[in-house]
Image (cartoon, rainbow, N blue to C red):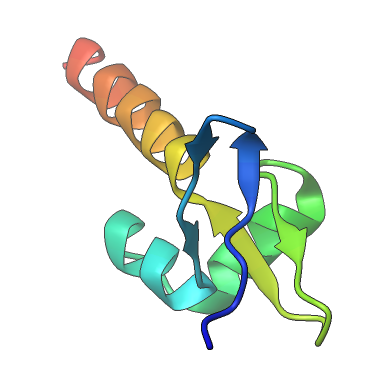
Length: 74
């Protein structure tokens, strides 16, 4: 049996990423992702076991914004 998937809307399930998966996308340490979440820079969800998970759509949006900002500052 698989774990239920979190949903941002009833019609569109959103994949949840671990801090390690988010860290790989941003090329930072997973602890950095945890600090970002604690500081409110990125939203997170807590699992029943207390682990953080991140909505893929939110992570990809933030990554796109940061990539766009970096490109436009050149």
